[in-house]
Image (cartoon, rainbow, N blue to C red):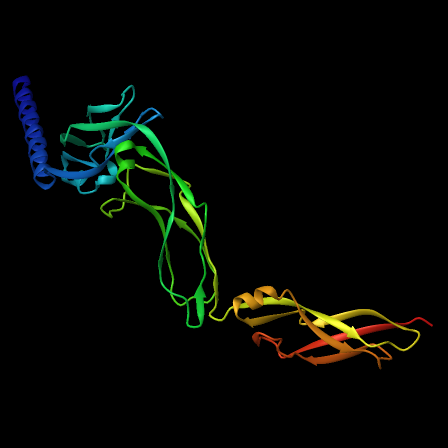
Length: 307
């Protein structure tokens, strides 16, 4: 009886082991181990403040293995490749790439696993900022002299890259504008071959304020209107205040003429004025002025009785 029980127990254990083996086999067939490759950015840290990276690879390829249900859910964002530059001086150095990766996978290889890094001393130069204009003013308008603030920037980076700078500029792009162009624009740096330098350099400040005045094609200027009161008031009456609407007028003409005209004077005869009165005065073109933006002006003369 005891022997029969032992035989049954052995058969049961064999059956359980066989079932587990079959289950693992079936699961492995349904969820096999697969392999994939991702390309990730190569980061660097620990570099001394007076040093800068002049050259290094931008990316590395990481080959990894894992079960297909894990691998299918993984992307390059789940990996990190970095190099430590602590205690490294200027020169060309060979540095090992370290990786961070998600659970459930095994790293097969990293290409390259060691990288050549060129480290230089930080150099600084001050350069003028040019303005590249793409566009034109609307019909009847002109672009006047632009103003850049600041007009120069500081560029920091490896000396060999600084020596290869062709120009520093901002790009103002517009079309058919009739108002002043005012923008804060990013500073761009090109090498001597005309290619943008996107890495290795630091520009301070990163943006420049650009003002491009836009004026009408005919030179013009806004000047105040001055009322010249002529004539004698009736006895006992005195002018209290004079109100003008509009208070200014835009004049058009040759630039040297309008620049010499600081104001526009209009005469008003008040000899017959007995009380506060509103006048509409027609504006006549002064000598040398080609046009005005107003034809008439409203003038209110307020008086007080001194009696």
